[in-house]
Image (cartoon, rainbow, N blue to C red; front, side, top):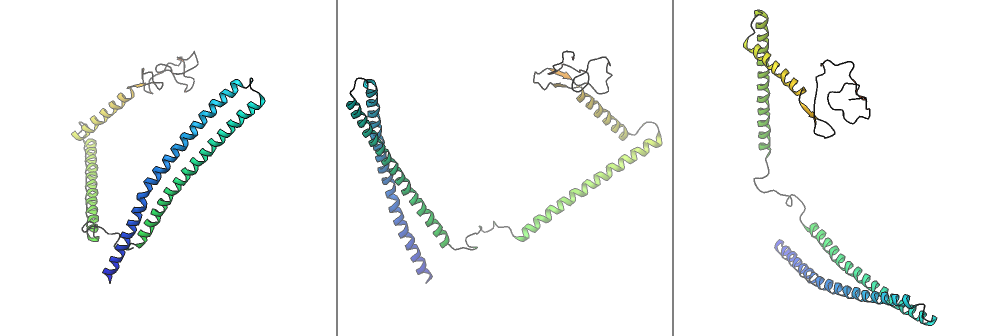
Length: 256
């Protein structure tokens, strides 16, 4: 019974495909015929417009020498040609709309057939499946979480031990330095040397050359804040400080 239903369904699908293919095969020919006709109508309309332009120029150039009846006849001829041109343009627009409707009709039919095909498919777990071995099991997921937890715990324990060791070393060095009152131990000397190096690096950073904001590329020296300042030296208008280099974008001629 099941095999008979399957065969019937496959036969219906084949019939539908044959019918759809026959319909689609005719679409390119219809489009080509319509486009060719539209091109012919457009060419005919262009010829009529050229005739209108030529007759209008001739009428304007000789209108003073023409009799009233002749002028009227020429204007009637121009009106007829313009009416014919408008008619050809309307035919071209109607043909373009017909072509668009035909293509849109085929697209709508295909969309409707796709929706129907999806509804006929089996809805359930059989449609959304994964390849064997690709779906992770609950046991493997739990093992992965446990491994991450253990690694994190070991890392935290190591950091705590290192922190305790550093605190203990600093305390021992402090006690030794206080008790002896003379030459500091190697650890204290190393810490003092490291502090002096960091202080020197900070001073070097303060004294580095920086570039002005106006982009002229001229360096200026950043002077430390604790440098003694001449009280008689002119001040900046905005920040009320002395000039440490070249003045930038100031309208006051008294300021350096």
